[in-house]
Image 1 (cartoon, rainbow, N blue to C red):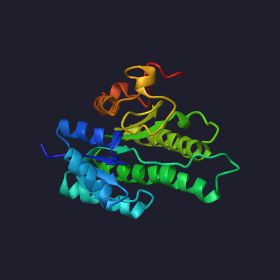
Image 2: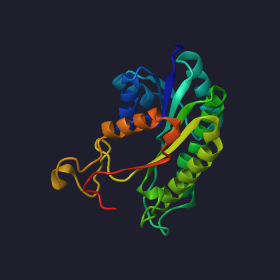
Image 3: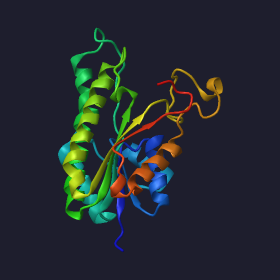
Amino acid sequence: MSPTSAIVVGAGPGLGAALCRRFLAEGLAVAAVRRSAEGADAVAADTGAHPYPADATDGERVREVFGQVTRELGPPELVVFNAGGFQPGTIRELSAETFEAGLRGTTLAGFNVGQAAAQTLGPRGHGTIIFTGATASVRGGKNFPALAAPKFGLRALAQCLARDLQPEGIHVAHTIVDGQIRNEHRGGRYSEAERGPDALLHPEAIADAYWQLHRQPRNAWTHELDLRPYVEPF
């Protein structure tokens, strides 16, 4: 069989790195895509993935990376969009530029990755595209307009892609990561020491769920999957 690959866009040191390790363990060559070359190199050195620096808001660069990965690692069968960032603040505090940056870094970047993935996976007639969402994908909150609006848009994009690509054999899924992720926790509402073991989402457990999504038979595909710790209220 010809070698195949996985592409993780937004391969940071928490969930992104865990995804790289999980897919490598399953025998896929993995492309770790991050905005900076230094960041991509760091995750690659830590996980064994191959570094590909790219700003996902640049559609041309994203398409270049997909072409490089196909030539160098093998055609991708699994693509994860895990990128995004935001600046908290109320509507009075946020600037239009900050709000637009959130839309570009999440929704536009997700569109660019989804489009490149569709163009790459489409001719093969199979594969998986997973978009990482959050609590803010379904519920806006105080101080989070620059996160909720982009994540709402990403969720809508995933729904559109699923209806477009599913008949071609391409599985499109959106996850709602509802809670704080261990290793990405930075002064959030609580810690495992305060709430007990497993109060934070473990990135390795999330990565397991992503692999399960990829391995689902097409007669029972999941489109949206909620993931949260047992103590997380919802």
